Image (tube, one colour):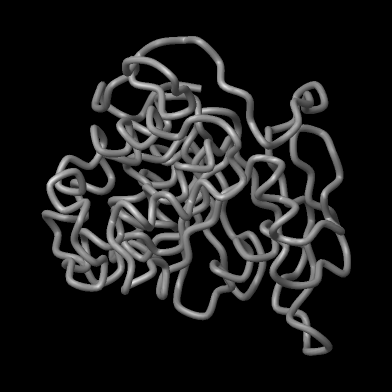
Length: 275
């Protein structure tokens, strides 16, 4: 697939490695297992998912969401389309009554969210995503709760990715701006050394400048080989950095394609991007 990222980001930095300077390649043991996807299948796929919360009505109707290794996949659509619900279904936060979720070829549909974290998935919710009374550094340490190795290398890489957090490492996260708290939330998720990073509305409530900065950092993370699955309200900007885009309407796929193709599609532009 062609690279939509326009050459932005740093392909040498690897948040998935630690124990040495940024850019080293010595692997660090992960808390999750190494498996291989089926031939031709994305590294993560929520395949034809139908389901909802508890005993309530179905919100998703045969919805398919997928992301390949090192790619950015974006879910967009109108309010109430089921975007965040699809993300939560992939992470195991609601019942998938039909269809399946597979990670590297393994069916994980029945696994709880914490078990998916152990297999290499990390989820950053839209709100309540930091411990406000803890310092920035303590928040990052909390993100490494499954780790049994030295986490200092990964923390240094998070600080390299988000330099303001190094300056504010001793400051309570609750005293930070909204954009800085989002950086803490993403950084804490990266401390698990995930293979899949899932972001629910990461730019909600931040200024356009901060949004652009967050998107640049997301591109940098993807360039290290981490897969990004993201729900985003700023559809045009999100599709601009996306390898793959999913436009959802009423819990189902309306359009699927590369970010570039969706931005150029007249139906998508008219219905979802303001013309």
